Amino acid sequence: MYLNNLQQDDVFVPSEMKALQTLTGMDSRRGLEQAIISNGKIVNVVSKRYGHIPNELFFKEAEAMLVNATLNYHKRTINRGDCSFIIDFIIEDDHQFTIKNDNDLILPMLRFKNSYDGSEKTSGHFGFYRKVCSNGLHVAQTEIGFSIRHTKNSTELIMPELNQLFHKFLDNEFYSIVHKFNTMKTIEIIDTETFVKDILEITKLFKYECSDKNDNPSKKSREVIEILDHEALILNELPNLWLGYNAFNDVLHNTMKKSFYQQEKLDKRLFETIYDMA
Image (cartoon, rainbow, N blue to C red; front, top):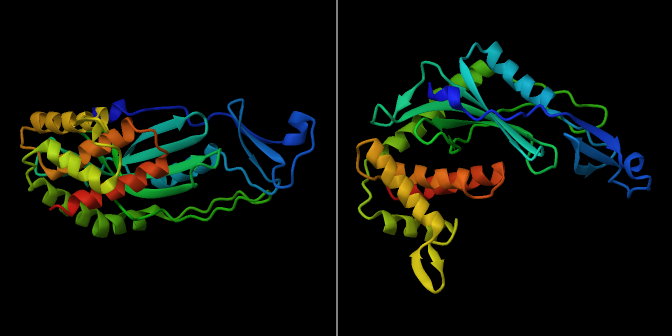
């Protein structure tokens, strides 16, 4: 039932590309001849050779891959300011795993990204969806390869056959990473405040202290500590590195103002830093 409450933003907003001169009545500099309009707003200015890839083309082609692969899935869609968009396809299949706790479910996930303002590379990759925190875990390295060209005369996408790629991911990376998750689960965190401070000193994700004159934990630091302690309580277990990683991941995705690309990059760094403690 928890998969029925996933975020469902409208990612199929109207978009088009228009000549900037038509819109402004003025000549434009070479290389900045076209405006990309998303839901009635100019969100980017590009060259006349640029090929706009609308979400209708990219995301529907991506979903067709899953339909053709006969995979059962749920969708989560996120629209940030009509500029950048993602669809997460959470695979609800026979490949469900718990991290040594029946209430801590992990599912394979495919994320596809597109943007109209140039902030995100049109791309797709595998990841994980965790029931408890409802966040994507982006520690997987397997990307979805496809052919795409941003040129005026070519906006064709050639998507791969997903079945082989999905099973290759499950047979290799999925199991090895889940094993790392379980290893992290076995390492207890004795002092959650010290743990959070140590991770922040290494990653520089944000400042642990409120200020240079106030050594108390900052608002984000307190949030990480509270999430960690709360998840340990609801899962009826002691704080551990796995819960610590997910507490940071929660704040990264829900509190910090970062692009999808930045979130994924920082997520991987957090995971590597915390796993090294195991």
